[in-house]
Length: 387
Image: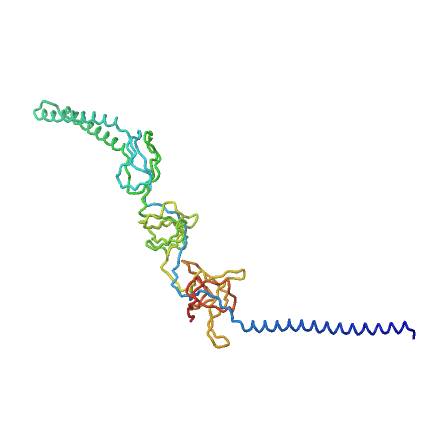
């Protein structure tokens, strides 16, 4: 074997041993790293296993059985008990305006005074003529008693006297009509005339509305006619006061049914002592019928909505592995019915007495452990026991 071959063999041996030592060293280093990593995972898993189960604070209320009155919905527009545009039947020049826009007035209160100087002069002339006609009539009656006047002449004097009386009464009525009075107690609108304006007969001066009582006219199907009676309660809400409910009653039912629509006109009456209701308000009505039904209801805030259906969380009592009392939630798909005054009917999925979560649902899932608290801020530590 040549010296070159021997040298190559020696070099190969040296590199083989170096490679072996490198592999062994790498294995030791990576083994230590992996051991440390796996030890950390094991410790983390043990720590997580020993962590307490998170508890979510929620508020809850029991599902209740209620007497749910049957309602007939309707829509109408409010109108005042009485309301007109005040005008005059006599033309004339406005001399005085005796009111301000928005005033409350009483029946017979003077609102506008028209110029009546000419009529007063004519009245004075007519009164003088009446006085003369009265004197001629009295003189004629005296002469007739002595047969110094004919009966025909006396009748003529009586006629002249009657005409004079009528002239005085006519002029007095014209003068009275030159003053425009409030036709009834009410609230005035915005005046539409000014002092010095010549007012034609029939031109509106101001609107007046009697707001003490409000009426609402609406239509219902003739199918409901047999259930409707004068005096039945009506619940009403308006766009102006969406959270306030007004209560009235049916005051009249139209005897004639519309042959084209099959609807019957109904009128409701609402007391308005506080003056909140105004003519022209849009009204949503619910006629309360005597028949009632037993239903299961929950607060509307308890309902959660999804593409797969409406659901609620029901609080369930139980024990943990250590035997301690715990509360968890169960997600239930439900069917809902009519809503009214913050409550909603549950057709299926919930029974009366079930404790339903009413707030805090965003943090929940099926089986989540919860603590039922009294305050809906979800911050009170005190818990409410769940039956």
